[in-house]
Length: 502
Image 1 (tube, rainbow, N blue to C red):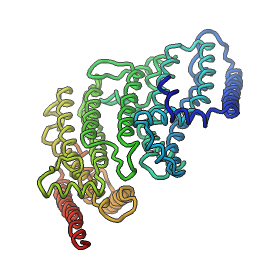
Image 2 (cartoon, helix red, strand yellow; image 1 turned 90 degrees about the vertical axis):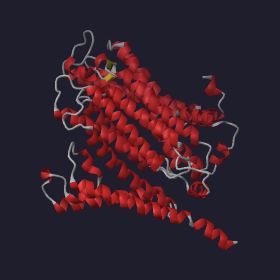
Image 3 (cartoon, helix red, strand yellow; image 1 turned 90 degrees about the horizontal axis):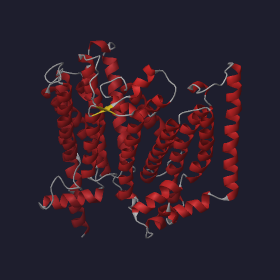
Image 4 (cartoon, helix red, strand yellow; image 1 turned 135 degrees about the horizontal axis):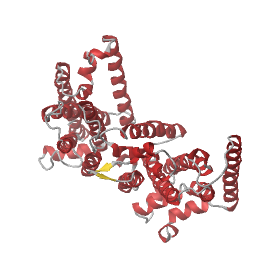
């Protein structure tokens, strides 16, 4: 606590947010909302003719009703507050004053992390206290309530850190930006988590958080069994796994913020190259640890589904590694001069990003070998090393091509080159999908030619070496060579321009 009370940034937020009139109004509204929910709950129970005797079910619990609201309101409020924190400072032209204070990046991070959403913690905290009292009255298990609050706090800290990172790298985040984050990050993660509970990666279900709390409440045993993931073959309570998973992801986001909070916006890089590779190792170790063959449904389809999940995670990792290792224009030009003088290598932090994507691919291939060895299915069900190498190399080729295109955009006079480059890449893939749909209406007979050539979907057709995919691989290799030539051509312009100016 002393770490916060002596933090100037936290104290600044405390004085701005926690004024007596605002605290009374927010606290009163929170208590009023809880009272209205209690009245609605009481009426609902009365209408169903429920008589209280001992523990109550989830559907009849006021604690459950209140926690549903709290579990949505607190993370979203924290995300919204932190999403605006740094962006508002930039708009008011005060962020430069914050960056140039004597506080280091870690102190600045703590001040923003717990200061910006301070009113959210206070207001929702009152509702959480009322929910806890109602749970005691309804004989809800105390360990379950405490673990639910712990998980909620960890997840709210994670969303706060994510909001701060977006606020740092995006110029003007708005309410639409918050909706974008919820839809494109929250929904897919939740859907993937629920789907993974019945897959060879049951540990991924910890992303959803809710299954881990089921054993602590009155739910059917068959439902609670879904919340028993394994980590390296050892059963771990899903709620503990959720806390550890979101806690570890929060550490990575915090690392990115500490790296960049005091930098100019043009110099921001989410991770260093080596940190990006460390993150790739972290994700693949999680996949290896979460892999647990389905005991009663060992089949070709289950292992193929596992490999598809594995490829999807690593495909996202290849693009993530490439984007975070994009080099700002001036640093790249400086590296190119040093590289031409043979004083720098392609593994420099300021070099082009493609070697690091290749390294992430090597990590994925090693992880695949571990997973196949754990399943005991090596050489069976089309899960061979040759096929895995082809699939991973195909994904790497498309990732390298797209990332090099973004790097080329950064060397042009384009405003917001990364955002516009990503939009152009998405437009390209959309056009290819439409062209493929026009080329063949029946997708059940195979992947349409244009899609197989111009997208990496051939990597997900387990065990099959499509001639279309092989042609696409060669075509993308040519595109990479052209992009490298264009990038080198632009990097070589600066010395000529300087000589002409002289």
